[in-house]
Length: 369
Image (cartoon, rainbow, N blue to C red; front, side, top):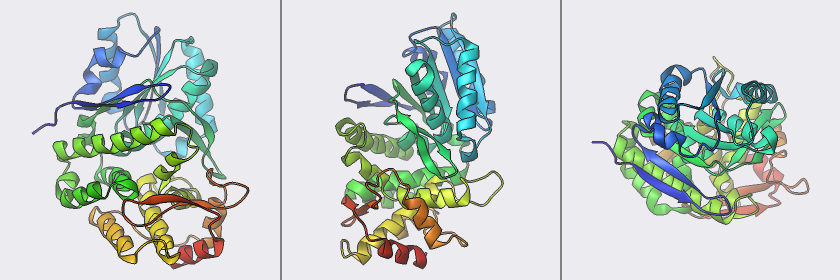
């Protein structure tokens, strides 16, 4: 059974639509609908290009024969999300002769989406971007909301811009080629939405674990749509992350510190990927909340159990020093005046931002792993 296509609208000053369904990467009319000019840069990576690049190009050319289509293929992996790769993407736009009505199509996962969006934000002070996410993680998180960035050695996503897409087109058929590890990493971000604000969704995920891990198209489409609805409503109210939107970072401050300390998942390594790091980070945030007397310890165990049921890690990898992780956390973008601000919770479905968190308490949690 295949889930029918559906849409989620994101409102605000720059509204756009999220399309979710099977076969969308071959729908030339849909792909071309938000392209205003005749220049298109298809930005993808070395894993996705052999699977979908020609399909998308052919669909676009059939729908709009006059398009001038360029392409830029990154080496796959978080290690490619750098200022150097950003410069290469800008060079690709320049070589294409992209004008101010050009469009960047981000075909891939979160790394591609972040880099393509940042390039689109900066070329001629901002051109259109259409997100074509091919991983579950990017479908439910990074493709929605317009946060774009690259990493530097000092921290993850420290150089970037807010640049909302003009459309998001999530082809659920792409999930059939997704490695199991990447599917599970995406499910960490799905679980996040239940943990931060929707206890009923959290319970639904507990009930649908087998179907989701088996790649059931109906269950996955429902999870994607519900996650996007959650993010869309929050982004509408807080597009520039001045308040409520920060709650979407539950687990991310801890997770980003782990990613930075490990070197951003270098190819061939056993380092945690983004979703795995967020899974560990959510457990650490829940444990800290319990130790601060904010939340019941049994909710931490429920979260840990659900993540483990989905095959996700819940402990800090061996060899990472608590002091080094805390130093990376001090560079987090949510911090103000050098004081830690963390997304913690009062229990499942009740996340909140907490300012001036005691570093000794954070170190204690990090030390316990």
